[in-house]
Length: 274
Image (cartoon, rainbow, N blue to C red; front, side):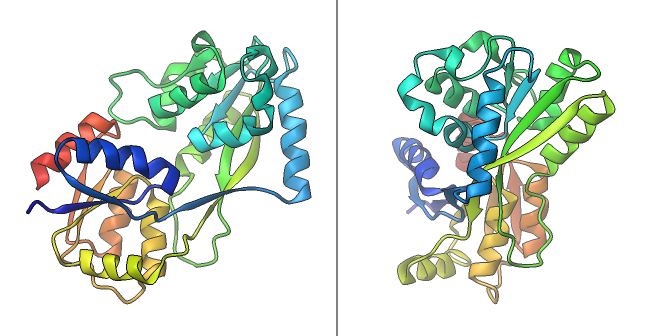
């Protein structure tokens, strides 16, 4: 029997990956290490309402950067009745920035026209803020406003996290270029509530040859929080970024591999590793 792949993305993001892996004859199962929920307090909702209105105002934002598909969904969620009117999503002169093709697809599905979307080059080594900046830095002039739509974490533990490091890097580059940067949290990344069966599965997967597929440093940190005493020296991890790989290594995984984040590249890496 071939080794099992554990897809650690949030449940709604994990299932398409599980299906794609299963279609290649691989044994895959979703074991979410992140839960996603709206920022629902009154202050967050007011900030979101104000930002949406500003994003509809021509000349207000040079660009709105969406850090993920979740950022797109939660920013536009209550605007769904207007989904086919692109002007009711973003002003025509406002660019929609993405760190990669997955977020771009979510923007297109929401109704943002393709000609308004910018992202890293298709052949970029990584899909991230650094690659995005190479594509869009020429758009920015002193005094421009850029909104970064992101997630937030309650951060109950003291484990250093690299989550959001790319966004902070991008914000720093924007400020150096003279732009005004606004950060807006529209969703929360939460520790998932695992069932006893999921805990047993995770413990077994530490030593049985399972491959852990990590697309987030925070997922690794949450795994450490859920199983704080687990020995990972026999564990196998495949990560989609150097920062995530470093996090998995620091968690104690004995074998850590890295792949470009495109689904085809990830599947090819898995097939080579197993």
